Image (cartoon, rainbow, N blue to C red; front, side):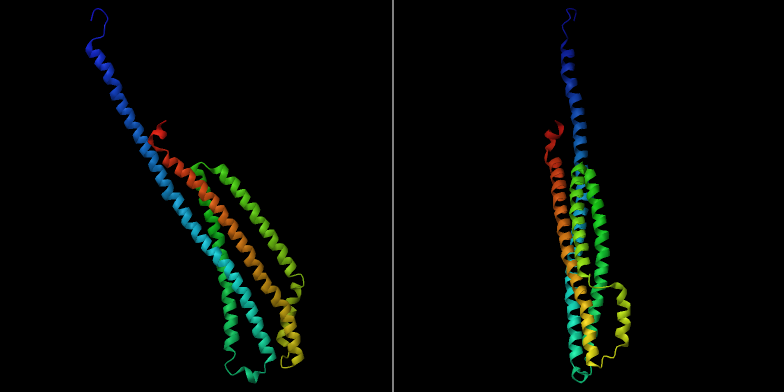
Length: 259
């Protein structure tokens, strides 16, 4: 119009354009929101759940490990008790098939030791793999600084347990000279055990070896249980950290996400 007043069409166009632009903008924002929500679901599926599954597996193996150490201590005591019984009981009273009993005990002890070695390998690898999953999840959730702080606390606590284990083990074996073990074994082989004096001497020396062996298993059981508890505390702290962060991102909602 000549007077400079916008036409009705111009006014309508001015009103409609923001609606169209807003619709496109809203659609773009909505797509971004959906994409972000998809990333969060993948975070749970690809990182959080596998971490929890592996942690359960690690804890199960570690729990079995320190329990097996306890069993090994009991098995060592059983072996010694059986040797004592054999040393004070005449062969004629032991019976023709008696050897089955001590051989079964010795076999069980050997199998326990092998099981412990296998579990030690399993736990070591599992804990290393789990730590990497913790680290990945910390990076994915943006909680790495807090994860690093908790990891340093865990390392300090576990190193303290290892130091205590070393101290107790050294104290436990202070009466044993490793250089004398081979000569002692040779002496056992050549010893005439039909003589009661020799039997008594033999059992005295055996006891000096078996007692620290039994105590060593107890030390390992006690300290590994302490390590297990520290690892579980570490997991609990991280689980809370990661879960809170993921939950916060999920529960903020669309409006909060936009603004």
